[in-house]
Image (cartoon, rainbow, N blue to C red; front, side, top):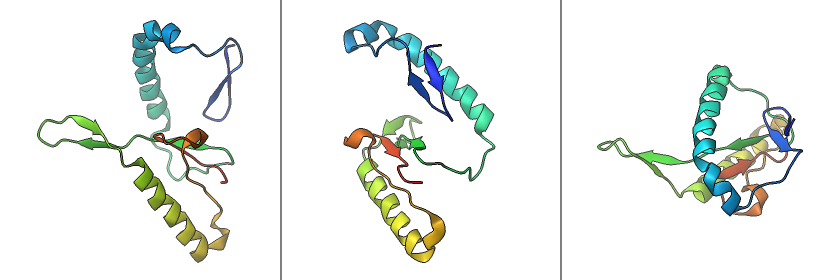
Length: 121
């Protein structure tokens, strides 16, 4: 089996990541199947509310703005701003409810990206 599935994630255990030139011809396949997999995953989990997060769990997100007239989505570049807002809210919640736990919001691998990582849940 090429991946080891954990709680909602996968780790490559066989083979190696492709470099860009090797990956380019496969992009259409990945996009098509990625969308299908996302829709199936969403359908299985859309009713879950307030699910517990565990140490190392991640939430990945994209920020988009929908143009009301054209109905076209545009990628927002406000990730750093939103991440800072979320981090500040976590600090406030810990002050008010110390037993609420500890969540950290930061870019994956320390680089500015659109991903947030739940480090210490």
